[in-house]
Length: 550
Ligand code: F6P
Image 1 (spheres, rainbow, N blue to C red):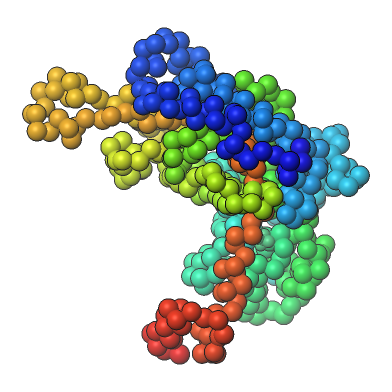
Image 2: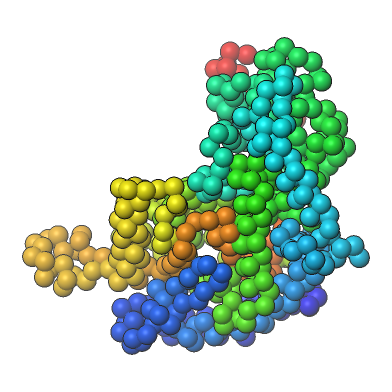
């Protein structure tokens, strides 16, 4: 559909029908919905790959879901999905295809961009990554002095950091424990300092990850890392080749930096940064878990891609999750969305999703450049569940805000855990189930009174409940299951962007800050007069220089 010819989202009959339905439902109670529908807990569930998804604890009826699906149909979400999978340039502001799904396509698949099948290129890079990872893992690849590589330091930021860093944590139990793998992203020198201070440079490989190879934080850290390495080894430029590899789309800049392009692992402009950790950007992860596990992860992604591409609307999980988000975002004024993993290994998962979701759907103009007058992407937040229970869950349970949440957990701990630590898993998951129950059904004043609570405390101990949650339950956190989970959220974000008619694949909003930082820097270092600095910033810079001792 031509974007210009679209009716504004909130003027469509489907939107109006949802608004009316919301009014009619009023303050629908989950207790009532469950009482009215005895099979709701088993009926409002779907499966995709190894994931079991329970959406029964949502403030929705069959009618709500039907109307939401009608909205998706009217916005041609599946049409845009097919255009994405076909390699059409749906990232219109950058005139690019959006083909992270091609990164996990099987070898014999055909996905064309500008008439060229990109799948052979994808697999050629995967093969090159695999061969390199094997050489590092086996000790065949040695550093400049001939020592085996024992440390891998990934230097990148945003999508060139969060994905591999998250996945490395998630899959720690599958990593080669003889390797130390660290991730440096912050341009604060403390980050690199802490990452290398106890490492032997002769045993350290730096993986410089940057799609553009121009990102100032990454290039600055990479330059400092090169300085550190050469100082430590008391070697010249010739040592770089054995200790630096690059992951990028920009061979010219990689060469300019001094990295041999033979040691560059390529990807392409049709892979968005925040959708890139299953491309060459995943090299540090592949070194850590090995090529076979990495490919298992890609298969997990592909399973969900196929589901999203082919499952009918009624059983399409990413579609459902996207639409539920729209229900709260647009029809309940929810401002945020919590993702709460009950898995220690998923400690970086929500941080990863923040970029995926907020950089994709944090937009306020539609595809035609017109200001939207509907809410777009929510604030995504959260940390592993049990820790959150003793910190911010109070606000979710008894605060004044509606915070829809995803609970992600697994039936079995990773195989490495045994004895008491394995047994603890049931307690972890008891919390997982208890929390969604408490959030949904709460505790009425009468139930509180029945416990003998004095009247003056009844209001304090009452839980209103009715806090919506999705439960995503997997068998075990494996590489494949991680891939499935990530793909699920990628496509959920896609669905929402399609309904809101925004370009989920550009990120112009990060540009202004970058440009201003470049402009302000000489004011800090040299006290240079910077034209256009506002009075507040000028005063702050002067104060900074005074405190800094410049
Ligand atoms: O934050 C903006 C951004 O462009 C992200 O989209 C991207 O993931 C990150 O910077 C890093 O970019 P690059 O991989 O080009 O260094």
